Image (cartoon, rainbow, N blue to C red; front, side, top):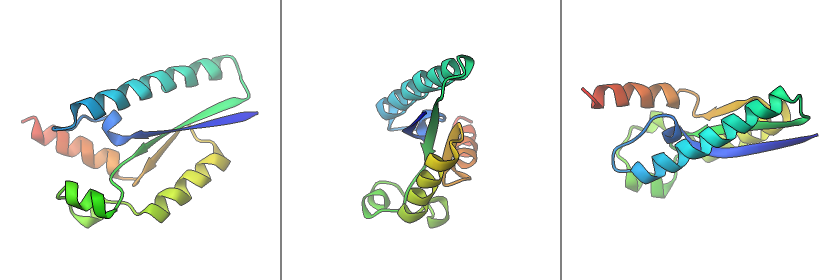
Length: 113
């Protein structure tokens, strides 16, 4: 039995301006591992894959790069705890902060208008 945890990004699901290469590489990473995940499920393999879509994590560097409200960012400890829990529970996906995918989709929708 084995488990693979893939560290990806919310930008692999919703693109962002000024980060096209990063978004593209995360989309490719997600596509590859979601496909591999389906193959392993179809073969009833004992190896499982969790894909982590991480959003903005509160660090000094991140605060300097982006102007976003604090409530949109997660903290390092919470992210690490969630990742460790994922290694035990083995869900197919892991998102941190929990609301980040919805927030980024909402922002993307209104940016495109």
